[in-house]
Image (tube, rainbow, N blue to C red):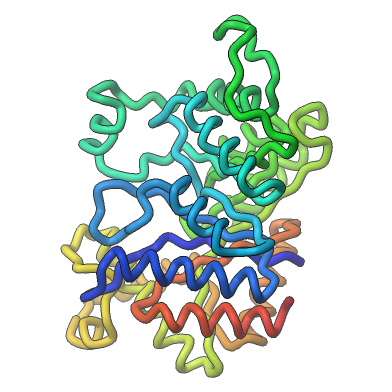
Length: 333
């Protein structure tokens, strides 16, 4: 089974975006060395807590400093942009780093309503055109005619021998159906939805409806999940508290200066309702030692009939991430 990493480049309390992005690169280099399959970076806008606003730029930096690992977007929020320009960005990356670029595409907002209007220059964001945008993007990436919408002589430069691999990202049956219809690999985000039942039903639907005449003739699906791993269960639980409180404060709108430190967490007294919410959110994360985490990852892959699991971590100390990924790689790769 393949293991991969999604890095959201979350800024910790007292740290800077520069420090966070430096650590993101360090993590990608370690993942390359350890044998992880791919390293994806996120797109988030208008937040002091998330440093990755332009995944294509961060992808270029990471790919230039690694050797073999696939580098991708997890993902580009396509409704904000022109499919043509996204295709140019991805094809240029593919020309620079042949056979290593993944174009993960999503339709989530990735920011506030104000940010949406800024990205669209005051025009409303329309997700209903997303399926057509995906078709258009694929056509540009593969140097195919795009039909009546555009002039038949239009193509996205540069021409490349190995086009980027397009992945559909999602956390609902509708995204699974779209991936199936267009014959694309599908990454289900359990780290967003938290409901394995919905996720496994969505991926089963993906396999049932898969269009073998689409982009690829064989369905391929993976699942992404939050993760915390350490030498002991107690240390893994300590690390996972950063996830617990980050998610709680995000969902309740509590002001935050970044991923909370152990001291900030210790000083906070959660209500009974907040404790219950944090327990519910544990369906979005795997926590354990290398061996117990391995068992949970393998069980998750079986439930989703997935060939690959993508791990994401929320930690205060980025060195805890480096240790966790090294531990799980030693146990599984």
